[in-house]
Length: 92
Figure: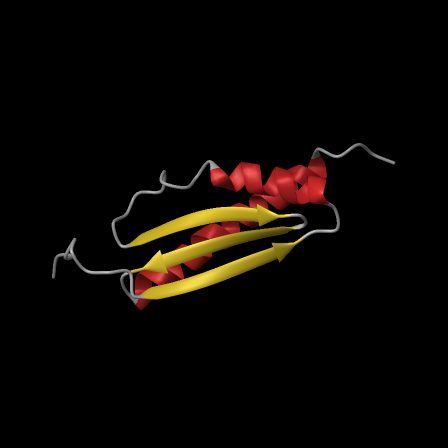
């Protein structure tokens, strides 16, 4: 059954990621924010915000399957950004 473009986004997940320093949160937020609107699909949408040491990713979906896929996608994007930020920090 084709997706109805007039259907609303009835499902939502809020993922929050906390960091020990605002700088780390800023690096992660800027890394994943680039992907907002770039991931193909008409069944989900997402937004990224940051407040101090917390990065929040809000995912809205038209159905639960799409919500699960969105959560998996955005969790992976954040994990990659975290690993990259850690690898780029100076050694002590």
